[in-house]
Amino acid sequence: MEWLPDLIKACYFLAALLFILGLKRMSSPRTARGGITWAGVGMLLAVLATLALPDIHNRGLILAAVLIGVSAAWWSGRRVAMTAMPQMVALYNGMGGGAAAAIGAVELIGYAGQSITLLDGGQFTANGASAPSGAQLALAVLGALIGAVSFSGSLIAFAKLQGWLDKRFVFPAQRVVNMLVLAAAVGLGVAIACGQLGLPLIAAFFALSLLFGLMMTLPIGGADMPVVISLYNAFTGLAVALEGFVLQNEAMIIAGTVVGAAGTLLTQLMAKAMNRSIGNVLFGSFGASGAVAQEIGGAQKPIEAADAAVMMAYAERVVIVPGYGMAVAQAQHKVWEFAQALIARGVKVKFAIHPVAGRMPGHMNVLLAEAGVPYDLIADMDDINPEFPVTDVALVIGANDVVNPLAKTDPASPIYGMPILDVSNAKQVIVIKRGKGTGFAGIENALFYADNARLLYGDGQAAAGQLVTELKALDH
Image (cartoon, rainbow, N blue to C red; front, side, top):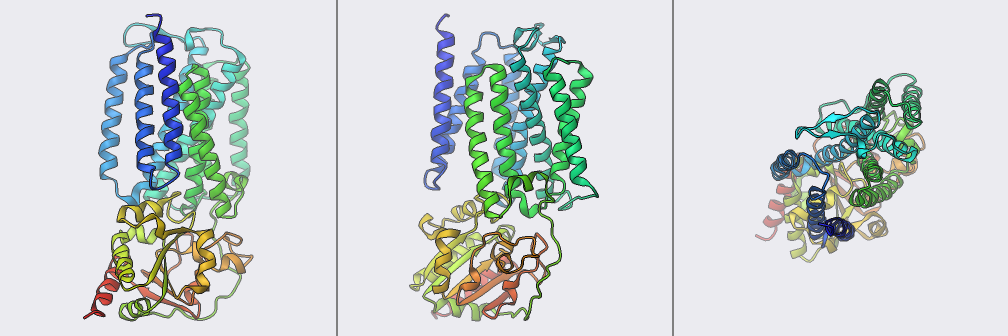
């Protein structure tokens, strides 16, 4: 079948096209679902084309693994709560990095002259060649390094978001130790790329790479996970692309490049939204909390649900600002029900989303979409901030650091310089909050003590339900 290689390459090209078009459609909430479907069809096509390669061994075993993976993903995807979606994304992203690292490991072992006996009785040596080029070695090493870091780092991110690990883990001279571990891993990688292909050296290289991923992520606070998830997403894409060059697989090259580029851009946007540099993300004491030098005057002033409902019922403009607390309380449906009741009374309602609200990029958008909030009512930070001065009431539910005025007024604050939603500029602010404690980053919020702010204490879903009840009571 002389035409088979050309057909496989055509399938890879079509798969890559579907990846790119799918990603483009994911840029809008209106077309995102279709974009995911397009990309999924592209992946299916790429898998089928790969299985058709003449030199593929163990097709039965590969198919069994694919079926197991698809079944597990389908089951977990159907059962996972929206509040747990960030850790699932981190876990799946880590699996991609781990797969790239595993490809690199097999290639390097093969390059080392260690033939691997396959289940069908065949022998494997990387790419069938015992003398790889310097470029192949370098790409295999670099892809393995990045993939291993993404794998172990993503597992730590998953554990933090799942609540299995403390928010941060620090020790003296941590940056220096981290840099030494990275330097040792890079040094071993350079030696391997130069032809030192002993199995102990390869094992040590992977051990140090995995260790660096762990140590780089352990000191990062859970409140800063949106940037971390984006960063490791970029790492995984880059690792896959590099290993695609090693395997000479066009689908891996294009898909990995697209994911790496998109992840890099998203990381830059997330870092900008938190006023941090990428270098600070990688090597700083990222997400550190600390005492705020600026004194916060005043006191937190409570409000009853009935009074809050009346205040918003007779307002002209209301802006609702959701945060992770809304996700934890699973209050998005009640919040939208309340918003619909306000709209029915003629109140102009909008939802304001900060770029890093929640635990991953777009988390709040997904929750609101799940509740059925129309896209034209959702505004991003740059668009909504000029409207706060003419907003009668801003309702904050579960958000903390992204509405904290100290980001603009206190140079000693860990979040100083971070762009925020200017909720404090609204005429009145109502904050739904479970208690008087600080947010996830451990930073006191000056908004809660402002003269125009009132706090409605209670669980987010229960409080939103009370607002709905009180608002309906006004009509009777």
